[in-house]
Amino acid sequence: MTPGSPSANSHAPVDQVLGELHGAVQRIAANVERVLVGKPDVVRLALVTLLAEGHLLVEDVPGVGKTSLAKALARSIDCTVSRVQFTPDLLPSDITGSSIYNRQENDFEFRPGPIFANIVVGDEINRASPKTQSALLECMEEHQVTVDGNTYPLGSPFMVIATQNPIEMEGTYALPEAQRDRFTARVSIGYPDPQAELAMVDEHAGHNPLDDLRPVSDAAQILRLVEAVRRVHLSPEVRRYAVELVSATRRLPELRLGASPRSTLHLVRAARAQAALAGRDFVVPDDIHAISIPVLAHRLVMTAEAQAARRSPAELIRALLQRVPVPTAALDPSAAFVRSMNNNAGTPR
Image (tube, rainbow, N blue to C red; front, side):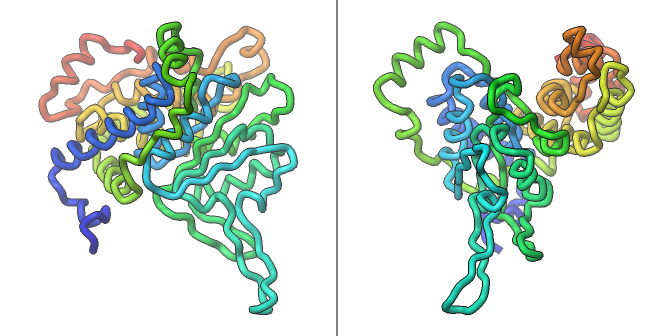
């Protein structure tokens, strides 16, 4: 067993593991923020998704830094990285790979596609046809690729960071529900404030900051941190709260399709990562509140009436956070969080 393996660190003291996690996350965040100026919350959500073993969907208008975020995060970690530019003529085999006839061996051999990397950056995923989009379904859920009846495992860690333009834009295909459901979180970067945009012009006008980025972590460390996040305590009360929150989406009259059981798993995994980034080895309802909209909103399918009334999934989730009762049982050894939640019960985060 190597000292850097997750198993070798599975019994390390919690404080030591959380200390390593904080140091690594701060270095990665600082690296990414050199490229994506003025968006610390977006960078934090990307790191939460990475530590939750999930995939990130970055949706926004062109020019706000979607691809820069994905590439900066990928370059900050010393691991294998590939980039796929999705276009209407892209084929599934262009992503997964294909079997090529080898004349010397007189047999077919598998040539891996760009999906065989630790971090896969998919640029403008909704410009490819649904047939090509579906090539990612098995990869993202099962971390494997099946070609010509043979199954090939993907490496660890494995993360897909996909960017997409709003579906109202010309030349886009809406992602199917099954594809959206495989993304742990969706984030919109938004326009920077004037000060951040001015800083960006001052720092980035002369050169591309991506050229100066150097790795500040590696795949082995990320695996150790992922293992640490898995060990974050999730009490029965918080677990039940997450299930009740997701179940409530399935009873909303404004929705044709509520959140899936997979989204419950993604919610608690992201909550564990959120707690670890906050320096805790246990999850509290605040962690659920902090990541519920990024994790759940993109999975909800609105009715035509709700769309006509200009209701949004994020608005519905905020309303649920006010209605679903927050656990009042002791959730941590100090019970400090219980006292604060009793004073602010039902306040959406």
